[in-house]
Image (cartoon, rainbow over the protein chains, first blue to last red):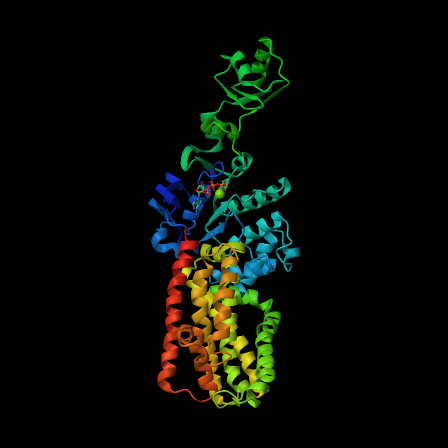
Length: 313
Length: 254
Ligand SMILES: Nc1ncnc2c1ncn2[C@@H]1O[C@H](COP(=O)(O)OP(=O)(O)OP(=O)(O)O)[C@@H](O)[C@H]1O
Ligand SMILES: [Mg+2]
């Protein structure tokens, strides 16, 4: 397979649209993914992340717009593109009645790999996914984290240039997430381009070089995690909890103290360059919050600012 | 490419083939024993003195061969197809690889055909052991059984890919497959039916399959009707395939 020219993006989408009947799931988005980077789609439930991923995976034809993957057109060259992709769908498609190893062997056959090659590859991948000792057990009783690792291992059977991961760590415990992140780092280091979706801010900050924030089928912001925070949030955030149900009343009392205050049901967020100084100023106004927490801004704050709600509703 | 999809079904079959072989032909063999030998004794010794000039067992065996091809095919085309669409979602895994919808349909149908070939061979050997079939022409009933299986599997694929649960399958088994099994010439010649129902029976693909199998096993088949029956079954395969492709696309490519 000829190497992809480095100067051309690996994926480019222009006015990419997906409609289900009258409903617009993806409403004309533009983005580019470059070779070797980790690119993220961040957004709440129903934002259109999976719909976008399925179009990139060439299993869902776009309703409008143009999409080029590895320089090819999914409408004309779908099978050829899919042969060079790895796909981790949001819902696992493992065969739970086959063994861990058989799942990889069967999947390798879908790519037309010879039996001996798949066999060798399966051993490597089981090792990579830390599943070697479970290789000959049936999939069904495995934990969620193990199944997810198997899905990722399986998606690598054809040595993909581009790996699509739709919510790779949703539903996993923190330990399992860290193991997965570690595996994804290694893949990225070995030159695989990653495209992933997530609900988790920390995941996006950890893994993504660049990301877009989606909401209601549109892209509402784009950049590196650092850029997004610089652009859409202040350096620090001061979180205040008051002994009351209505935090809005306190926001009025703090008016003018900082450029922006976000009112949440259970706390106030004060966007500030210096959390400690602002905390002192709050006390100087005679207010006594139950708790005060000064922290660095995160993508969560960016998201809150852009969409006016928390990410995981 | 379809061979890649077929290889999945084989991998999954390798785990269960022993059990499915036994359950697959135990039922038809029981029917053959109970009806052919038990009931057959009454028919043969009664005023009828057999059916169409042969013993009831000889009359019945090729009918059951055709009917079990239908049943195996329908069974393999209902839950496994819906499961691959909705529960285990194997089709989705295949579509993420370079396979396309036609590969999924053809690969799975070929597997069903192979299942029918296996159960039919096993059943045929049993009937020979029973002494119910003796002609070498009966070897040709095997390709007929496979054709019969496909004539049912293809349209049932189309139906299964549109289901959301087992409700539709229960209707299919109860109101279509079971009556067909009983009234399409498996157990008695359709001429026994009232004229209107006889016509209905002759429209069913099973009747054509039974006629072919019986004609071959009893060495009474002639070329022209044989070609007619084969053509009719092929028509079902073709139309079913076309419908199955449409159903699969509608359900899987969103
Ligand atoms: N096949 C479909 N038919 C109709 N509507 C659909 C279909 N698939 C998705 N949608 C709708 O499109 C919208 C976007 O769905 P999508 O799955 O892309 O969101 P998402 O960002 O992946 O959400 P989540 O975080 O919950 O996975 C949702 O409102 C969803 O209900
Ligand atoms: Mg999703």
